[in-house]
Image (cartoon, rainbow, N blue to C red; front, side):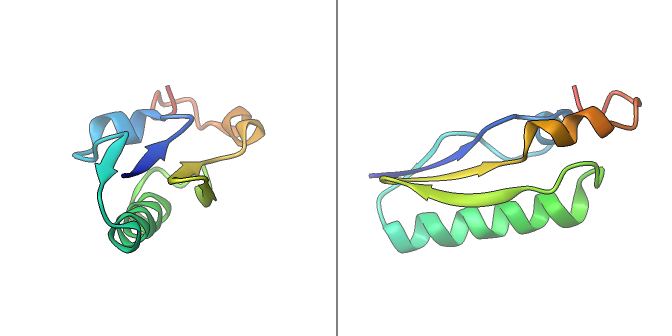
Length: 79
């Protein structure tokens, strides 16, 4: 079993239809899902964070560097 995990969940993610901690049987399908999520988040969210994808054991983790949160626009999208 492989998981797609979103760390540092921002307000844009919370308002989206995405689910966190997805469990997917196939590693290839999990990677494909994680890539699609990361790309969508980078292209369609508030553009205040640059999301990155890393593989950790059986998990694919999408996150952004915490220092990027300090450049939040202040509209509440990052909370």
